[in-house]
Length: 236
Image (tube, rainbow, N blue to C red; front, side, top):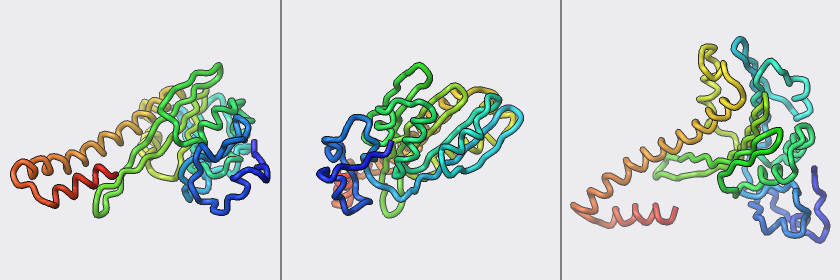
């Protein structure tokens, strides 16, 4: 579903295609309109596919969701990962081919969702928040919405941008003896969620490394540097 904005609508007149779009910008459009709401990233919409069972594994990239029809197999688990949400046609094609409710597709593109789980007859839809950090002059936290569709023999993940958060999962899949290769799409979904949660513990460790000495400094020798550090965390 690709919507042609009416000439009176604000999105039809929007000049800066990289600007962030808010939920308010969608006012007046019909329910299920596929508009990417949130920060615009440069990821063009790469589609990668991993298919595996306990004997074999194959990886490839496809240009469009229509190519997925040739790859579907009842003898393997298919994991489709989409990096980038700017190409709404990809999301619409997934909805058409897999019969996904239009409001689910709208939620995938609206990146201000709360974490949730919704169960339907043929699939389960999950939303989680991934977290990462940049370690330059100071710790900068960044968040990302990750949507997951769990089907009988297929899992589809939608990420706002290209990153390495699922690299540990791909690494495990290369090991033929790993439990991940022995189980179904539900176990793959569990491992993906577990990988996202693991990143929270990594961030927690880094925060501990900052906060523990800061607490000691505040008690023993408070100074302007400690105050600036506190202000940074409050602002960010």
